[in-house]
Length: 174
Ligand SMILES: [Fe+2]
Image 1 (cartoon, rainbow, N blue to C red):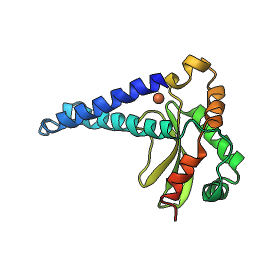
Image 2 (cartoon, rainbow, N blue to C red):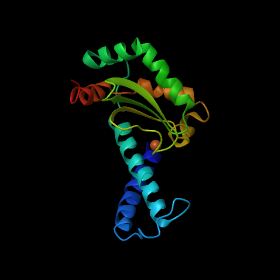
Image 3 (cartoon, rainbow, N blue to C red):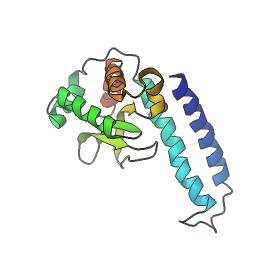
């Protein structure tokens, strides 16, 4: 967790630094191959992604795992078939990812889906709300699990606080 916090602090500092620089950045020289303006705009999404992803990650750890209950469990069962099917898909997504596996609610589709992320800023979609963020950058598991990413993912599930996720879902579910 200490490693995550160090990175998290760095993302906040960089977000603030980029936001400041954008105020005076040269728009006239904006260029898609390379330009300061492009770098600032791209890296801003990395920095703010790193902040938001980690806030969700920190917020729902420290629990006792198990399964969610109530409307969240109903929705997971409806959209994935069962809680076990959701967990299997979330784990597979995390094994296939280079950065994150995210459970999010898509407002237009009225559907939960496990999204894959290769970085702090890829590949979220519009009109979706993040519910579970599983960090699979190497800093998340290498110190404790070396290359055994699957064991780290199982431990993540065992420490997930579903009450936090249930509250978030209840705050907007229809
Ligand atoms: Fe992290």
